[in-house]
Amino acid sequence: MERARSSRQYVSKAALVLCALVAGLVLPSAAHARLVFPAPQPLSPVGEGASDPAVAVDPQDRATVAWLRFGGGQLRIESARVGADGVPGEVNTLLSVAQDRLFGPQVALGPDGGATVVWERDTEIFKKSDCSAGAFSTCVQAVRIDPGGAPGPVMTLARFDTPERDPDIVGATKGPQVAVDSQGRATVAWASTDYEAGTLGVIQSVRLEADGSPEPVQTLSVDPAANPSLAIDPEDRVTVVWDRARRIEAVRLGADGTPGTVQTLFKRGANADPQVAVDRRGRATVV
Image 1 (cartoon, rainbow, N blue to C red):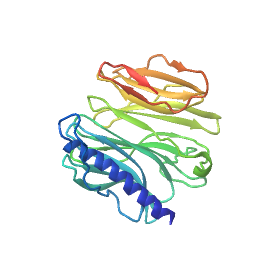
Image 2: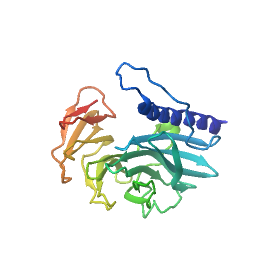
Image 3: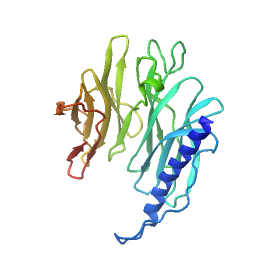
């Protein structure tokens, strides 16, 4: 019964995403005109649990949607491209696992329409997978989807150790975040933990070149930090924000990927989970 409810919730979410895209295409030019929403279209199979959709739109008005889906004993990261005419294309399975848990798929699109999808993968205690090399149990993974919609191989960007999660106790987990610059380079940021070493979390990032090759991983914060968010300005500079010990902190990475000095934006009261956006003049707004 619970699975059926999850599926219905997902179809509703996916339909809303799709409607928003199509409405943007058919919206009359007059600023005061009424929005027109066509009938929703499901993107995933009805009757199987799907959740956590993410969407981004490219310069050709095509949307790429990614989500989680459980079916047939497998947990999957799936994606589909919705054309500028609102018609969804083929669903691609980016990853399918039987035992590991997957968190927070996110998607970002480059200027050529290529997409980068990222997520966090957690191997359960006492079990092994290609993610849990050595003492590590968690990894950050990504797939690049070319402008034609064909997905590439799964890339593991980082591995680290985390305590065993119980979603009923700790709630939802925020996965890695991603943004793509004008040259098609994707910057991915996440919170990395080392449970045995007592590290609660540091913010790390990596930049993927346009061909998908990763640069070295950089550590941006000190412990304990969580909940990164990032945005890229027209000069390809990346602003990353996060929370640490009830403070909101930020750093800017130059167009060459070099991080500047970390700044504390706010430290009064209890603050968490900041979000950031950047305007055409490179000014960042953090909330």
